[in-house]
Length: 346
Image (cartoon, rainbow, N blue to C red):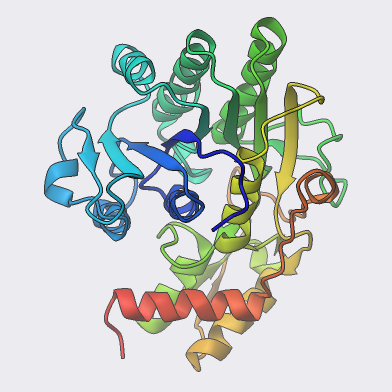
């Protein structure tokens, strides 16, 4: 049990998502009361989303209907789930009024850089309109702290490495990145005008068990196991601040459990592994764990992508004692172990 002083009632949006699932599980472990919210859209396999919920005691049959509050069979006094769109302003406001949340963790968003090239409307509706509705609900319900997901993609064409929250982020190269930057600007406005404490977390490349099928870790492992070539963009000349999900979840919960006191109401932090790893080294590690060589299809850089990401997390370390310490070897091994178990591979 975490040494927290107060059991909080927390709204966790994006609860069926990769990061949301792990954050929810840790909040439950730490003794909080959590209401999970997600629209369970079909951006990727909904079975994976419903299976994550099932791990937390939420039955698929009960949670498939919109606007129906479902009690967890495993954590009856701590976890409930409701399927809802953030764009549904009236239902969201009703939920806030009825539940009297202490803090909000907004991880819900239309994810994916490349998907935003062809489906821009989904990003405006979920990431801009949905986030505005969250802010308005926080404003009218005296929420003590809003923690929300931003993204390393806001750094766009920034060439200074490692990325610092002091850097200018005025050159996004995807609509997804532009919506995340807009979230930060909107949060700043609400913090300034209405004294709402907000903390934005710029996530870097997150991987681990229960991960998203559109992310590199999943794509590479799935392709190698099933004898398909992996797509290696920019001809392998890429680096990423790969961060294991347990380190991310611990960081998010630390921020949630420590609402702003005697500091600026508006804060932004990078949350990553504090180091950059070559994509080829990451692939090498997957091959070592799988004991199988990957067939590689070398391709040019994709639109909206960048060659290097690296998070400076000094502020998060200083303010919250954030300690990302999972090695690539450990993290890849944990993901492969989960993948083989989940898909019943010997």
